[in-house]
Length: 246
Image (tube, rainbow, N blue to C red; front, top):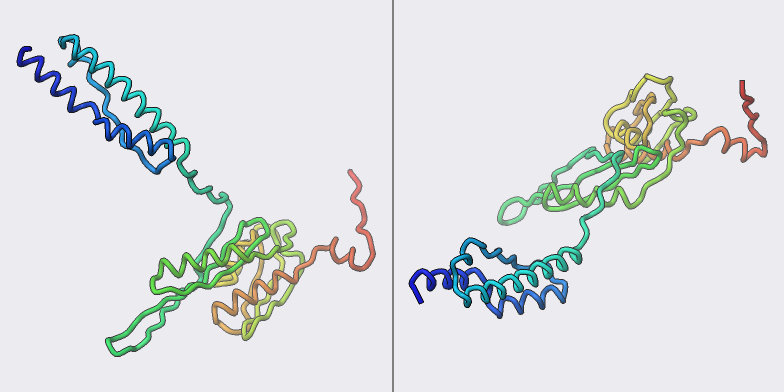
């Protein structure tokens, strides 16, 4: 056998995977593992001038490559699905981050707390409070907590149905309906809550404490008190006048 043929056979042996590697990959495919090693396709130019032995080895390499390719397809089909994307209208805002320092013998240890407001801008809003040693972690905890406990808000033509005052602790918030095009005349925690709820026109004023947590809770208390005209009429046992077509 010539030196060229020996070199070609040696290259083919380097390209093809060992029997042990093939067996391991097939087992992983059957067990639906997380990943599988990929096989390199044999270059057809190398096998043109090879002998009959080279042709047989090329056939074996091709068969093994087909098996490896099938194994990869099985693993991909059984891979865990990607997390579902959040709704396009989802709203999330960090209202306040507080840092706390604890003095110990070796120095000071810092911890963080975050207040987050989230909503779907379609009448549902909630808030969450999280604590952790890192800022990113406390925001993550607060975000998860805000999505677990959401309240429904009655909205009429992008504004609130009537004037309302919400209270919580020392916080006191006044909300008034506004005409179309007014926008959100509010700031701080009040603005975050009404924007997350999907309200586009409102007049707001904070009348009590400036504590962000109490302001957010007072705003949610005000939104929970809102009632539509139909709901009030139903409680009184009356019916709304039917609108006739022009």
